[in-house]
Image (cartoon, rainbow over all chains, first blue to last red):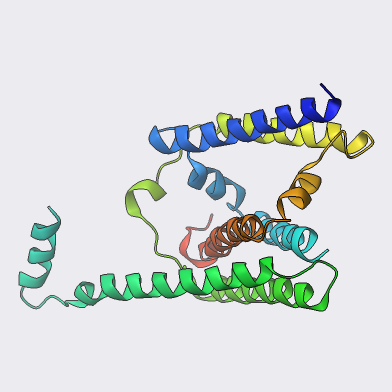
Length: 64
Length: 164
């Protein structure tokens, strides 16, 4: 087993945690993805930072 | 329940019946948005990074999002309709912070290691996935959904109560 296999295995686990949290919080009364989004965009500064971050993300992944 | 609610709306004397035409219009708007978004995702997924087409495709989305955010901030009208029941839910977010913390920690660990082949980051995993156009289109669709949620939040500039 190489280090790449270990790393990929951990990545799969991390993405699985995200999936469990997303589904779990959606099905229960706990804070769901919308609650997280409300928190992350609660102020004008946060909204602008999130928008700029989103722009950078798209540029980094799809254009550069 | 739904039938009774609709019936009450239509039966109430002197009450505007605007709600009757809203649902089909919303559905049509959503269908057009999904079709346009899907076409955009498929087109952008077909572009190659570091080319003019890729720059143009991503740049167009960035400019449109900035314009929509500005309009939302000025008018206070969210582009997507908001659900009343779920939108008000705000429970504990600790599970999200744990997931985000795990992702950031593992990304940073891999980022400072080398070679990249043995320590893949999110970017290198994406590069691997992007060889398939449909997979890249799905990632672009997720990016668009996230952008729509951020842009919609700009409506809060006017609609949220301000502190005295």
